[in-house]
Image 1 (cartoon, rainbow, N blue to C red):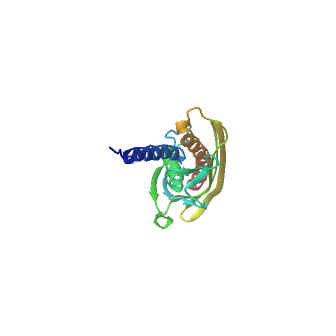
Image 2 (cartoon, helix red, strand yellow):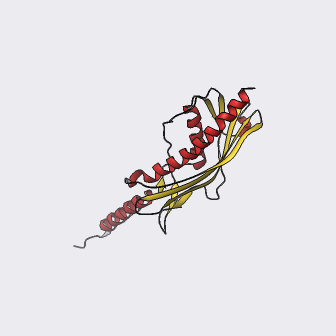
Image 3 (cartoon, helix red, strand yellow):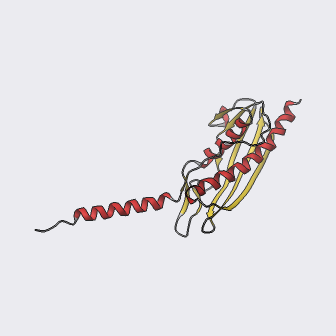
Length: 194
């Protein structure tokens, strides 16, 4: 009796597909943001955060895992950066609302942003490096109160590789978002003092 090799081939292909899927998943970076805000000054204003724009030529790409594989974002990078600003302002006590476009922002304090660089690279066996650059703009009733490009670099070893990429990306974004918020709050205080 002749045995069919068909089931063996299917099993082999299934194992290969699962192996490749497991390898491919290592290069997808879940974009998260820390939930805690430390040493936060009190904020008492209504703020509108407009969806940030991603100015990078390849919005899904983040950097290099190895010579053949690139890191890709698990979600939208501009939305991640927008959410970071929203959470930081809300965590400081501001009443925040999110809008998709500046046309829907209305009056009052409005924050917009442009993601200019997000780079993630594995630089050693268990060391990652991220470089970020985001331009933040604060306006009130159409008048620009603050505009600056914030940059940051984080490089460090992380023992547990499973969450390393997500962790270092969150740390890098939090670093520059906090810088921007700490610069914007005095600008808002100055305007409200008059």
